[in-house]
Structures are given as structure tokens and as C-alpha cells.
Length: 158
Length: 163
Image (cartoon, rainbow over all chains, first blue to last red; front, side, top):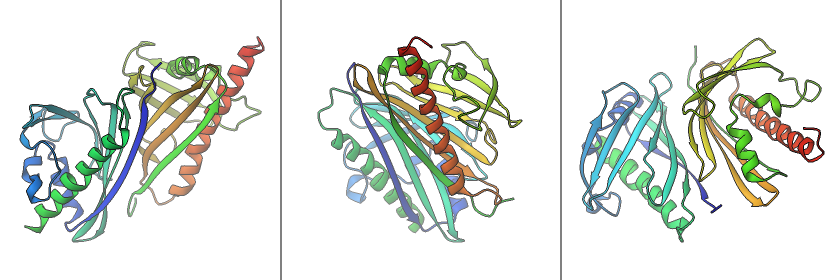
């Protein structure tokens, strides 16, 4: 049996926003165009965001966001579990030629009334025929650091 | 009541002297834990019986593990990737007293024809101040040890014809 490569990523970032405000933005599942940055603005390298459509109902799990990118690819991420009390979500992503079994969690820890820490952790498997596993991992790290963290920081700095 | 959630990431891994496919099959036998679970002389975490809700190959399927301690641990297997030999499952709140938002993954990596490695990762929250996150992390990692100990015993019995 061909061997998959196991990948784990754990990232955390300080955000200057109340934990409640950040939680509202994170759980606005199809609202990523509110905070998404283009590459020149400091966002993630690679294809740009064209649209994001919600499949399902806001505030009800499961709900899916269908993200269309300008290279023609479509990514679907489904929010499976949301705990408003402890401010943690779990979500998955549809498999593609390189990545399977993607599952991630985000949670927010309050620092004070005006700042918090956003954590993201994910696990996934990289297909056996992918030569450069580190490149795949780097792509996800860039998504968390540049798309997610930079985008949210810029959104709350406005 | 709680002041702030305690965030916990638990992880463990270990070698099992058995074919990866056999370990994978046992892992997917969702209500078959008693085949491999350590005996009462080997662990204080004793299982009385297990109810399966859902078909044996159905996703999702739910096992209700009735523990001798008087609580029931309900775990739903919601993803099984046969090609990558990885599962994801959740546990209902307080399935282990004090644990909330528990979601775990287990995977099996082949190391040779009769040898493989099991890996376990989980995230969860402790919401009540009376529980300590570090203690709960060690507790969960100990359960992963027990699972692997049970698997080692099960496959040893298979090899000696006592299974």
C-alpha cells in the first residue's frame, strides 16, 4: 500500500480585537471576503479569491463555504462543530489530488477586553505521489499566516 | 462554572507487531474494543459492554461504551479514509468526565509486513475549574497507551493461537 505522509500544523497569533468580535467574524463562515487580502496587500501567494458561497444556514452546523479561486479551482470547507461558550470550531476540507483527511480546529483565547489569541491546528495526509511534502505543508502555513492572520489583523486595524 | 477554557492537545504513538491492515481492521471494528481491551487485572478502566448505533461499516457510527465507573462514553466515528488508514471520531461532552469538544484522529502506518505504528492526536477543552488540563492530557494519553497495550496483547494471542 502506498504510503501517505502525515502532516500536523499548529499556529497561534495575537489579534487586536475582543474575543467576541473575532468569534463573530470566524463563525461568519462564508464571510471571508470581509477580511481576505490580495497578495500585494500582504495576503497569501497564489490564486486569488473570486467568491465564497454559503451552503447551509448561518449559525447552524454543519454548514459549508464554497470558495472559488481565480485559477478555476473550488474548495469546500464544512464547519462541523461550533461551541460558542468555549469559542472553538472544527471543520474539514474536501480532499484533492494532493491532500486527504484534512481536519482542523480554531479556538480563541481572550487576553483582555481588546485582544485575544487565535489558534489554528490541522492534521492531514499528503498523497504518496507528491514529491515535495514540505511544499504542501508550507502552502497551508502560508494560508494560516498570510490569509488568516494578516487578513484578520488588517480587518480589525481598520 | 469556568473562568477560561483549558485547551488540551493530547498525542501518543507506538509500535504494534502486526500487519498494518490487521490493525486497521481492528480499529474499524467500532464496537469490538472488548476483543483487545486490557483485562481488569491490567487496567482500572474497565468496560462493561458496548452498544453500536449504526451499521458496522456505516459512517457515521456511534459506540456507547459503558464503563464500570458508572458513566457511558459515546464516540462517533465520522470519517474513515481507507487509503490513508486514518479515522476521525468525536466524543460526547463528559464522555470522560470534564472533557468537552473532544475530536480525535487515529492512523496506522505500515513499517513492515508484520509491523506498524499507530498514532493518536486529539484536541479538547476543560471547561470546569475543578479539572486540571494537564492531568486530563495525561489521562487521555494513558488511554491511548491502554489501547495499544490491548492491541499488542490481542495480536500476541493471535500469533500463539490463543486469540
